[in-house]
Length: 287
Ligand code: SF4
Ligand code: SF4
Image (cartoon, rainbow, N blue to C red; front, side, top):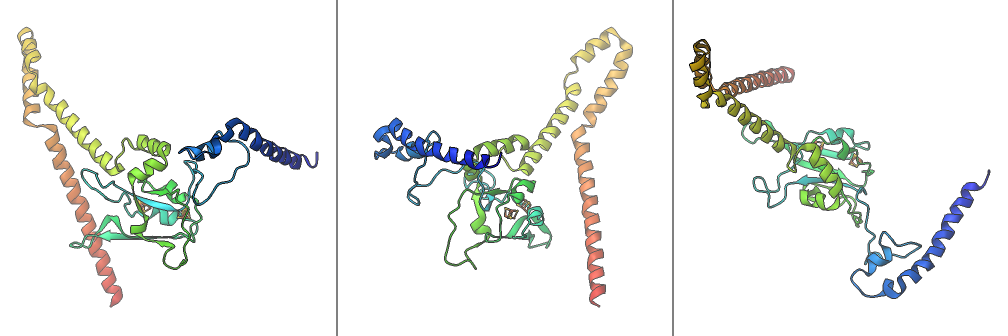
């Protein structure tokens, strides 16, 4: 039937209008006392009806998934190993997926070798172009860019103040936990800990290596059962003794580390060769 939508809308408005007065009766004068939670009573989640917020003295709390412009996550200042370290690895994915292309990143490089290092040297976001879509946050594989709740960004100069640089963009991880506790917890569960994903991966690798080492060392460290078996079945002892000896002589982690080193050297050599080829090609092009 035509006009049903309009009637429904009017019904909701009228309901809110009357709720304003019934809520006044429910709270009585408590809404207007000078108590600390005065604002919470007037505009808390249970409050009904139409109300006025005395902005900017009073601000309505925003929902956890509210998003304004992005910020970059860094370690807290009291982090035991790397205080203030960037979570961003300058991979550039956020800049690629950003629909209005308002992110600009320069990756840092090692001053001695000139090679790129996984950290941003410069990071800019033009917040006048940003459309608050949150794609950068969704696509970041390192949970390094998040959407902020701070919406008071008006200024008199858009040419400089509205282009947020690295210094302006960084905020500690504890800030993200405070504005989005549920999302931060879900992300930490998915990563396997509260740390940066690279730190967690390294820790898991170390733990796996230690577990392998312990497993390899176990038969050599517990010869008692073999001795008793040997006493009962001499033929089995002939087999078990050399195996235990071999395990003791060649511990597995040492072999793994050597293999890792060899692979690393191979990778480095390949990279060196590729760089040399690229350099030669560039020189050839210049000439
Ligand atoms: S914020 Fe995330 S996606 Fe963007 S460059 Fe840094 S690590 Fe990559
Ligand atoms: S929120 Fe959207 S528009 Fe803004 S920087 Fe991120 S991807 Fe770009």
